[in-house]
Image (cartoon, rainbow, N blue to C red; front, side, top):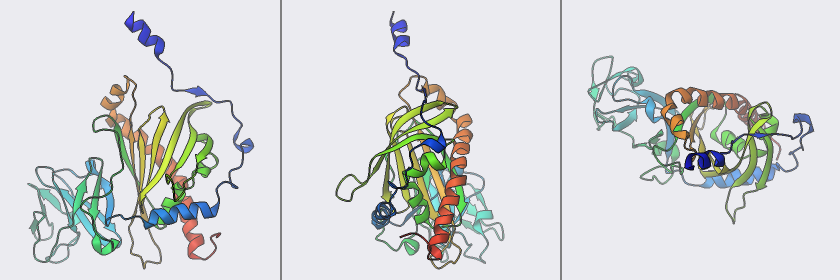
Length: 335
């Protein structure tokens, strides 16, 4: 009897959409006011970051093998792990003769330069000074005080996520010709979702706009398209906890508490005429459904699919961000 009762309570997350086609949906341009988006962006960029920058996925750096090399704000860095899994980070140039340490190897937890065999254990050596590094379990962060120029903090501001072991996470990375603010501005414009990404989002309505004196968030009712007219409706909340991060929380509906974190890491320095920014997006999905345990078990198979979905969106959104930067840099961006 209990099994039958449990089956009777089961409901499908899918709904059959009956809304208008793309060209017949209600225009959103009058709601997406440039000033409103600009004010939300201004408040986001004014928040402290503690000089922390996301450099990649935690699982991309293992105790053996190759280190992770990145350039952040024009500074070359390298990240690796000790034998116990502790992350280390520092300048990406060997203090001996300047070899690129990203091409070196990790041997017994030490970074061994492939030019002359100089080994670094993560502590200061011959002018080589380590950078603070933080592993939040999904992403790796490095603190670069010379780039950020703010009051440093002990740890980065990691968004609230599903409890460890309760979700399936994947990290997608792409690079575009723009600045971090262009990526953040894209995410602080939810109105473009069902127009620009009709293959993923439909029936989008902004039900709450951010206000400086209240909860500074966009709240959106939207349906994720699964196939044809089959959709999954949710309520999502967009916040910007620090200058280079926008977080989408699923507040209600299927997958409540799931998050999508968009982190924008500058690769070039502030004076570079051709800026480049890495979009590092962490997707952490969860569900209260009993069958989600199977999804967690199949995480290695699901991650490529999650990255592919993010990649399709960012193919378009990076074009959006690059266009915004081009208009700003030539003085043609609407005020």
